[in-house]
Image 1 (cartoon, one colour):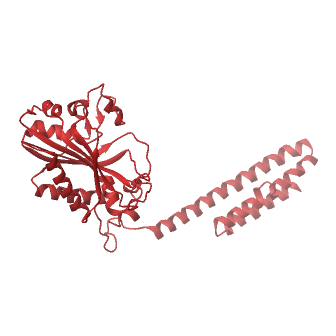
Image 2 (tube, helix red, strand yellow; image 1 turned 90 degrees about the horizontal axis):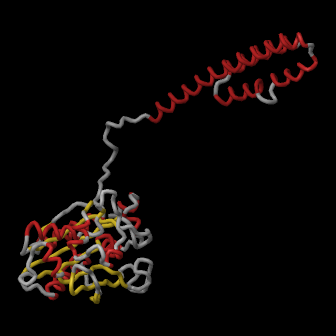
Image 3 (cartoon, one colour; image 1 turned 30 degrees about the vertical axis):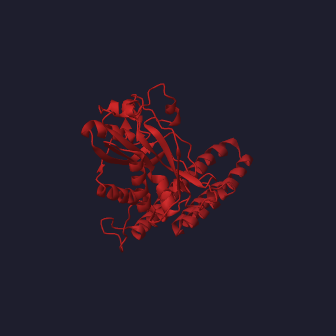
Length: 340
């Protein structure tokens, strides 16, 4: 009796597998025959009533039926999966060698646009555009800028140090050192580029950002020269009058040093996350080049003088375009970038 049931199960289930036209129907037939509550499981419960000799012979038949059904199921399932994959590939196939449909013009990053505009301005004023390595030596990044190893100003800049003793430059001032040593005075130069500081990221701080630093070394350079060039720069960038303030500031490489702040253009001075509720944004540290910096580049400070400034291109872009979160500039979100 059980032998007949097993053979009938084998025949009926193989027929159901063959008749299935989808993976869902195939799975339904498998569960009905081989599932925990399927026909084979019900037949197995009847083995307890059999004599030991019958259990042995019918047990072999049960295992054979189960193996045949599972093998046939796997073969049919594989054919279904291969067929579905082929259909999907045929539907989704594209020729990647063909040009993309329609015109999809690109655009320069807003910081790049701003940098090129400032470069054009300073080129018209007789300044050279210099570049330098992003991986710098301690001597160029600190020592030559009047920041020796024991100087407290080193604590002002959280530095990414490398295993070989080099570092990721914390400002583009090392390019000024390289420029003075390579070309000597008189010198007019700007140094735009990417810099790195180990800072906690928030709406107004990033670990990777962009600066543009400038320098003029000549005879009889004064603070008046510095103010003239800074006013020319800001009026060119913002295309309007902006409110600024000049206050004393400490920087080891300039003496005297100043902080040039700009009235926050995001909140119009009422206070926001970008200006830390103060209404002002630190934009442009500057001052007259410290005599020690000139000496380390073999320039006689009794004969030559100069001014230097550092401009945060990233923050400047935020002010110009009304961007309230610095992280958007590095995020790579095309929805943001295509606005420029």
